Picture 1: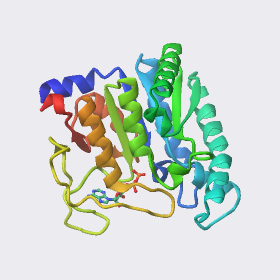
Picture 2: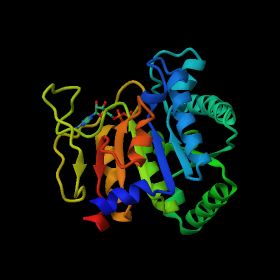
Picture 3: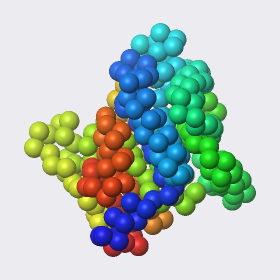
Length: 270
Ligand code: ADP
């Protein structure tokens, strides 16, 4: 355990995934207060020499807000159009906020075929390595505008995507910033007596009965996809932590070796 904690504290390449409900308001618009805090922490870590990759959701919600559409879009072309609109704003905000701290960002839009095709995989890996060598912060999202699989899921969600990216680039740590403290023994939104599980030793063999899907107005995924992400990381030897994104300083606490949220122990550290 101490060895794992030390690995986490020494993590050089860190993938951080932020969910829609963390960085956007209920109406889909960007939560600037929270996003600014997150950007400051990530920019600071980059300044400290860490390689940072940010996987971010939010494009469809922001697209909806920009087009004054209050209902969740139902048709695929609508979703893809709103993703195309929202992605531009999302990147505009990130680029502007990161530039306040002298950090350059790059947009990386990924589709599932990147991992299914060896050549594309190698190419994507090379691109990530070059961006990180440049000291740039890659900002990753699924290519919602062209990937039907994303919206009618195959990658399906950015939890899985972030784990795939972490594995692809050989990251040392994946942090999922959610709207909840971590994984509970049952859905705390439905059960008042739910308890936070601080550590999961064997995500591949442990049945986590309490993890339900959410499919709320803005995001998709929920805990099932996070557990799927943890399984990918476990196999790849990457520790994964779910914590609440409402306070980005949790990232510092994680890197100080403190117990935050739910830690998923990778296979090699069991
Ligand atoms: P985000 O995109 O912010 O990560 P998600 O909706 O994808 O948010 O996932 C977090 C949500 O998962 C929680 O708000 C909660 O409603 C739901 N959930 C379902 N089961 C659990 C569980 N066992 N522990 C924690 N959260 C759970």
